[in-house]
Length: 399
Ligand code: GLA
Figure 1 (cartoon, rainbow, N blue to C red):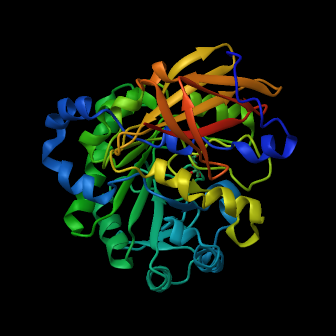
Figure 2: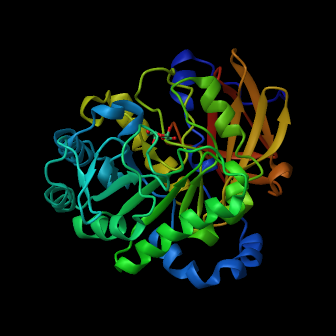
C-alpha cells in the first residue's frame, strides 16, 4: 500500500507478535442510523431479543474440534477449562453442545439425549454452577446434519425440554436442501422462536442456514439473535479469509440482539500460523483443556474483546482496498475508531491509514491492540509493517 514513516518495527518477533484477528472489527454491529430505520420492522420482538444478545455472544462450541466425540465428560472438562484458563472472566460464557447429543423420542414425542449424555439437566446444573451458560443444537428438519433426530413437528416439545434442562442457547441448523420458497424456511425458524418464547426461559436463537436467501435481511424478524452468513469454516487461511472479508457490506444488518455470524473461531486448532486469525462472534472451537499459552493470550486479549463487545454494536467494514491490502474501520461507542490493516499477501508489507480516510483531522493517539501498547501521538497518518496473512489492529483517538 502506501509507503511512509514508522518503519521502526520490522523485527520478526514484532511482526509475529503483531496481528492476529479481525475480531472486533468484524464484531457484529450496524450503523445506528440504519438500525433506526430497520427497527420498525421487528419492533415487537426487538427488546427481548436485544436483551438476550446485547453484544455478540461469546463462548465455545464443540463442533470444530470434537465433532461427534463430544460427551458429558468433555463438556464438564470444558466448563472447568473455561474457568481455569480465564476465558470465562474474559467473557466466554456460552458452552455450546453441537450435533450428536440426540437420542430417541419417546411415545410422548419427548426427545432424550443419547448414551453420551446420561443426564442433561445435571449437566446444565454443573455448567450453571460455574456461572456459565449451556447451549444445544437441533435442526428444523427431520434430521440434523449428522443424521440425528431433528425437531420437525416437535418444536414445542423440544423447546419445553430444553427449558426444563436449563438450556440457554439453541443453534438451529437447516441441514436440508434450500427450499424453493423462502417462506418455508422463515416459517420453520419462526415456529421454533415462538416455541422458545412460550417457555418463558430466555434462550438465544442462533440460525444456521449458511447465509442462504440473504438471511441477514429477515433473520431478526423470525427471532434470530444471530445467523450464519456463510458455509462452514475450516482451519485454513484461505477459507477463513474468504469468509471474513466477505462480511463487508453486511454491517448494516447487525446490531444489539441480532448479529451476523461468520462461523466459529479456529484459534488454537493448529492449521493456521499465528498471524492468520480472523475472529468474529467469538465462539471458540478448540480443545480448551489443551491450549498453548499463546492461544489463551489471543482468545483473552481484553483490548480486542472490548472492540468486539463494544456497546454501540457497529460492525466493521472495508474503507479501502488495493489488491491484497485492505483497510477496515470500526467506529466505537466512545467516538474512537478501530482500524485493521490487513495484508492478504504472502510477504510482509508496509501499510498506511491516512487519518482523513477515517474522519480524523490532524493528530491522534494510537494503541496497538495485539501488542497491548500505546504507540503515542501521530500526525495525519499511521504506517506499520503487516506480516504475511496478518493484521495490524489499532485503536485511534482524535486529539
Ligand atoms: C453443519 C454446521 C456445522 C455443524 C454441523 C453438525 O455442517 O454448519 O457448524 O453444526 O452441521 O452436524
